[in-house]
Length: 145
Image 1 (cartoon, rainbow, N blue to C red):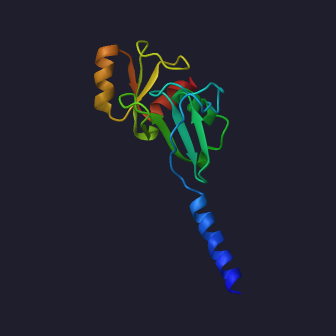
Image 2 (cartoon, helix red, strand yellow):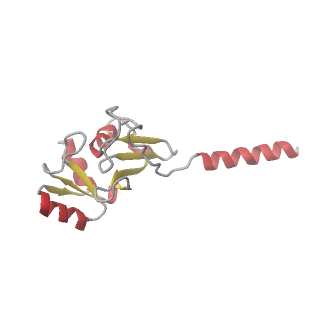
Image 3 (cartoon, rainbow, N blue to C red):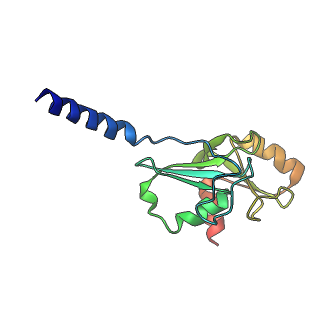
């Protein structure tokens, strides 16, 4: 009986900790984009989705992540993450980011789309590189059109 109880507790702990809903580092040069299948190499434009069950989807760009969302049940998504343009490899909450589309900042899939942790950072690059700023919701609407 004691073994059955230990097995049950162990199974519950594994189930609880097995569904870790958190971002994972992108292995640049090895991980592939779930949407376009390209190898992820750009450390300032990559993106990631984490589902409520902890499943990861990695993308070489925010625009690939957004296009993937057209094919996926968005109610299952817990985290939308984009690389912070000013801090290579750092993933930030895309729903709180400010996005800049500027023809003077190339991105992997040609949308010229970059994410910034703060609006101030985005405005600084906009003043230097031109382009338009978008919130997450504005960006989703813009890319649908």
